[in-house]
Length: 240
Image 1 (tube, one colour):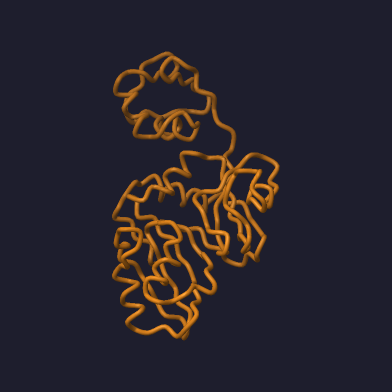
Image 2 (cartoon, rainbow, N blue to C red):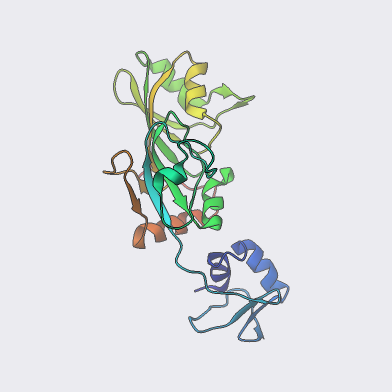
């Protein structure tokens, strides 16, 4: 494993910060000053800024179908909070939010570095939704939604919007403004009746039912990590 990835996965720092400290000579492998691009074997001892790095335990990433009515907060004092609802045996926290009146895919993890990278707006990470509104959708509505709508003193990024039926559309966002889809619809004179998130990057809701969850593991988790650690604003996942 590359040294910067090892340090990031261990929760010590980001890959970028790891590279900075390696360049400054602050990282040792088996008591020798490490260099950029160095590899770490299973039995190597790594010291970062004078402290021995403990190999992290396996990280947990969960895909949950959040039902309507559950709050995406780690505050256990909040009624119907997602942590109590999930009741997972070890500490995890939600990656981002999905408002109380919305449903669908939410990720939970104990991996802070992974969560931060998923949430970085500049990475243009895709989130896909299916939305039902209160009246018939027009061609003009689809066009305006896709080109950008003025909300919260800004104009939303251009996005993919596709009509599915008279009152239902699919939308892929690359930003996460507060209640963004609902505000966009309201700005155009529509009210959201149902909002369901079906994808975050390469993670799909799939066959999960409301309240069900599954662990993200193996190839799916590796693909997710590869995507978020690219740090590329050119990322395009619309083929998924």
